[in-house]
Length: 117
Image (cartoon, rainbow, N blue to C red; front, side, top):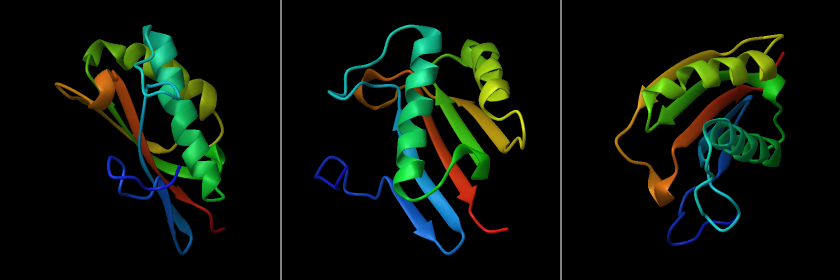
């Protein structure tokens, strides 16, 4: 995705051995919110993974994740998702509740990856 007036920032930005991934929302390709707790978490992680890959990174290289959710009770499902996708080298994580997210999304995930040795 290229910068637009609504998205004037980089979706992912490499700085040396680091990749910074902008917040990825639980929305579909038309920016409609994904419904369902597990589905919303999966959509946000998928969008974040796509952005990470666009800068040459992989999930195995993620060292920090931040989850923003509109319902703090999503934590249990997020923990299950986290354990499945980050079973080898678990990154640090922050999990925060927000009152609202863009486009009516219920989940947003950003990340930092380290691509060095």
